[in-house]
Length: 352
Image (cartoon, rainbow, N blue to C red; front, side):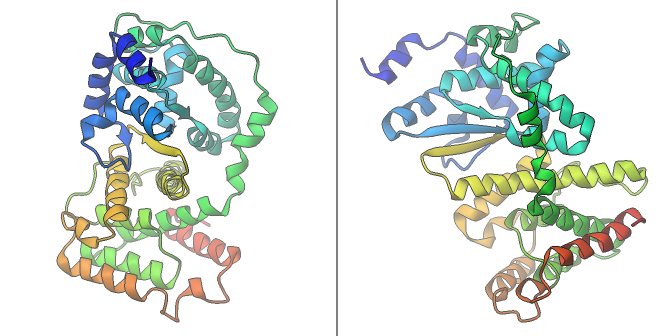
C-alpha cells in the first residue's frame, strides 16, 4: 500500500475545515507557483514528499510564535490563537517541520528579560508541537477551549539562551537597521514627492551604502501608489523608546525577508514557507518573490510609474561600474557602517 493511498484512507475528518480556516487567514508566504488555495492543501505536501523526495519547513514570525505559546501559557483562545494552533495541526498532518528560530531571535533581541522568557516559551512551543493532532485541531476549530501540552524531556536552557542571543553580534542585522533608518529619515523628514523620496533612497543605496532586493521592494511599496497599512511603524509624536522599538521592528521585517531569500537560493531538498500575520510584511515578501522569479521590474507597475521603473533599470545596469560607490571603495568597513548608523540615528531620534 503506497503512502499517498494510506493518507487518503486515514485522512483526518477535521483537515478540510482546518485548511479552509487557514486559507481564509492567508498567513503563508511562499515561492510555490501554484494556485493559492493549493498551498493550503496538506495532501499536496505529502504527495511532493512521496514523489519528489521534497521536505518542507515552515518559518514562524514572532507574532504567530506568541499566538501558539499563548494557547497554554495564558490560556488564550482568541481567533488568532486558534488559527495559530490550527497551523501547527496542519503542519503535523502535512509533515511540515516548524522552525521557530528566527521568532526566538527577534524576541530575545528586545532585552535580557525577553531572552530569558523566550527560552521558556521555546520549551512550551516544542511541547505544543508534540501534542496529539486531534487535540490541537479540536482547539483550533472551537470544540475545546484548552490544550494539554505533551510532556517532553527537560531542555538545556543555558545552551539555548546562548544560541538565541547570538544574532546581537551579527553585522547583517545592523546593515538592515541602517537601511531602515534611511527610509525613516527620508519618509518623515524630507518634504518632497514620494517618487523623489524613492529616487533619493535608491541613490543613497548606490553611492553611500549598498542594495538589497527586499529593502528596494520595501521602499517601492512605502513610496508607491498604495503603501501597506502600518508599514511605517515610526511616528514623529512617539517617545524615544517607541521610536527605537519601531525602527527595530521594521528592521526585523527586512532581516526575516532576507533570511527567506537566503534559504530559498541555497535550498536543497528542503522548501521553505514563512508564516506571518503582518500584512505589510507579507506584501513586501510577495512582491519581492515575484520580482526575483520574473527578473523584470515591470512587476512593480502597480506601485510606481514607468519613469521610476526606468530609473530602477538604469541603476541596476550600472551599479557595478559606478566608481563613486562607497561599497566598491577602500572606505567600506564595519566602522564605516557604524558611522552611518550614528549619523542617521541622530537624524531620526534627535540623539546620539
